Picture 1 (spheres, rainbow, N blue to C red):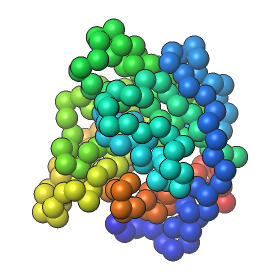
Picture 2 (picture 1 turned 120 degrees about the vertical axis):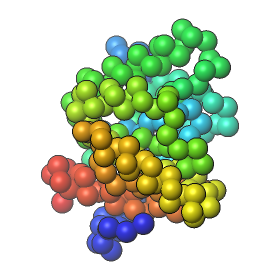
Picture 3 (picture 1 turned 120 degrees about the horizontal axis):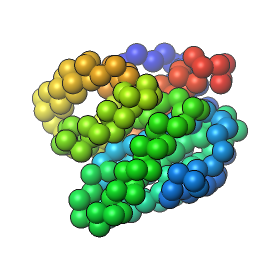
Picture 4 (picture 1 turned 180 degrees about the horizontal axis):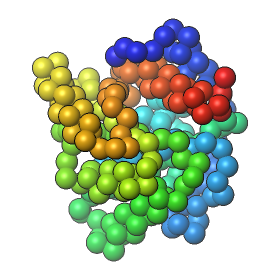
Length: 215
């Protein structure tokens, strides 16, 4: 992965080395914490690796709870340091859950995306082994509607052969070129090996610097 200078990589490392702590868990729109620091959210299908990625970014093994059971995260989980807030969103597209629960998660995700003015970017996590699925489209449509900046982060990139991975990236980039709120660059990561984690940190640091949050 290219496109970041050594200074940006270091800025990202420093940014995420701060003291992270749990802030709130919201299962309904009314329970969302007050808007404050700039928020960076992580969304994706169930079991795509959102919690594992947050733990890898912050260097904390158990900041975000991980599980091999799809649908385990049923709330918006907020973690903060002094300069920004990370948001672990409920996984979507988990058909095995009761329909009423799936609707509640979906409504919460869409309400958050449409109403959070301090939300700087949503990182859409896509399992590199499987690529985009139909379940991703409603959330992408909502972010386009709300003009929320979003970017694809491929997870589990270490589990895909190089040729297949290149084809997957090309497919995603072509799809997202047609979406008005999408940031064009695809980032690739592996929470297991650490691949791409410094670059994702640098991407967040660059975004916050552009917004004047960090220098």
